Structures are given as structure tokens and as C-alpha cells.
Length: 303
Image (cartoon, rainbow, N blue to C red; front, side, top):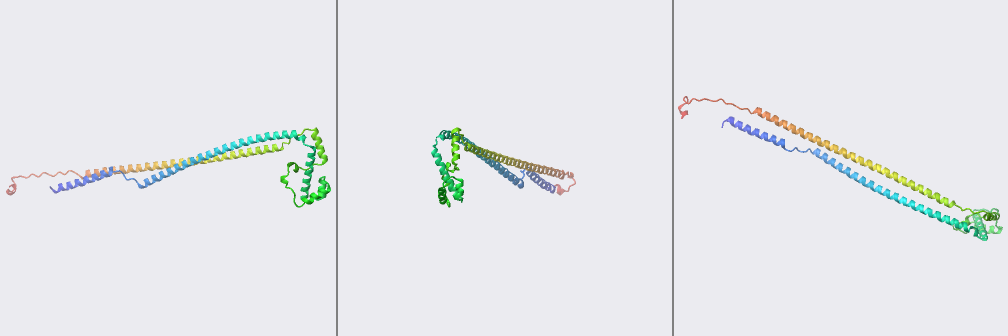
């Protein structure tokens, strides 16, 4: 083997190894960029957190809506119960007024006089306890002087009875004898009119309670509407953040794909350039043929 053949053999081996290395590098799967993988993992974690937050918000909104519905139903039931109670009270008061109207004229005259007298004693005791003198009490109440002095002496420092335990008729200011007689005459010749003051008072209180209940219901509906708006805003924010994260991940993926394609194109260009260079480097060598005349060779060489 000549020297030129040896050089050509070694050069072919080196060329084959170079082509094999370039081929392996070209078709070997590209390594992933660790920064890109970390970014994708971070985006996935953020998306999962936003989805969890959205689910929790929806569950809380459902719970609040259910609670408000239950409160509204309870309030409506309470209002219905109050209306029924009001109707029963009105019916009972009407029956009481009818009964009082029937039995009002049947109260004995002596009992009326006795009640009026006891009312005078109660009023005299209160006036004495307030610090009024006997003369002032006598000017207001037509009682004997000695009775007024005794009542004033006993009740001057402290009342001998509890005002809260007195019946309703004892709390009314006693009437004078002439006024009482005139009222008895009016009662005989005129029909009595029922006192509906308590009924009107209860009716006004009921209307006020209804207004308060309506106000509470309106406030509850307003709070529910605000909660729904906040929940919807949070949900929309979560959806927008999720969309932005998805778009960012897609853009990063597209950038990575473009970079990979660019690297592959550069590798292919390098391979083609290397192949062109190798083609230009390896050329066919034509050696001139040497003609030897055997007749002219020495005898020793011919043997």
C-alpha cells in the first residue's frame, strides 16, 4: 500500500466519522430549555390556583344565596303570622268592645261612686307625696279636711301603695260630683262610642313592623345583589387571568417551536455546508502511467 493510498484511507475514515456525528446531531431530539419548562410549570400552577379560587367563589355565592332565600322565607312566614295575630287581636278587641258596650249601662251607680272616691284618695296621696300642702290638695279634690290631713301625713315621705299595681280605673283622675252626674245623664240620653285608640295604636305598630320588615328584606336583597356582583367580578377576573396565562403559555410554546425550527434549519445548513466543503476537498487524483521497456532493464532486475 502506497503512502497516498494510506492518506486517502485515513481521510475517508475521518470524513465518515464527521458525517456520522453530524447525522446523529441533526436527528437527535433537541434538549428542552429548563427556563421554558419552569415557566410552563409556573403557568400551570397559576391556572390551577385560579380555577380553585373560581370554584370556591361559586360555592360561597351559592351558600350565601341559599341563606338569603331561607331568611326571606322566614321573614315572609313571620309577616304572615303577624298578620294573623293582628286579625285575631282586632277580632278579640271588637268582641270586647261589643261586650263592654252591652254591659256598660249595667254597672251599679254605687260602684261608680266608690271607684271615684278611691281615685280621689289615690290622687290625694300622690299630690301629698309630691310635696303639695293640705290647702292645695283640698282646692283640687273635694274631700274632708281631716281625711286630706291623714292621707298627707301617711304618704308625705313615701307612698303606702305601688302605683304600678293599681287598676286602670284608679289611675284616671277622679271627677267632681257635678261632672259625674252630668256624665251619667249623658250616658242615659246618648249612645256610647267605643274607644278605638288602642286599636289604632296596635294598627300603627303593626304597620311600622311591616315597614321595618320590608326595609330589612330590601337591605337583604341589596346585600345579595352586591355579593352576586362581587362574585361575578371575581369570576370574570379569574377567567381573564386564566386566558392571559393560556395565551402566554401558547406564545412561549410557539417561541420555543420557532427556536427549535431555527436550530434545525441552522443544523441542516451546517451539514450541507460541511458536505459541500468535503466534496470540494476530496478530488480524484490521476497518476500518470509509467511505461517501462523490459528490454532496457538490467538483467538482474528482469530475473
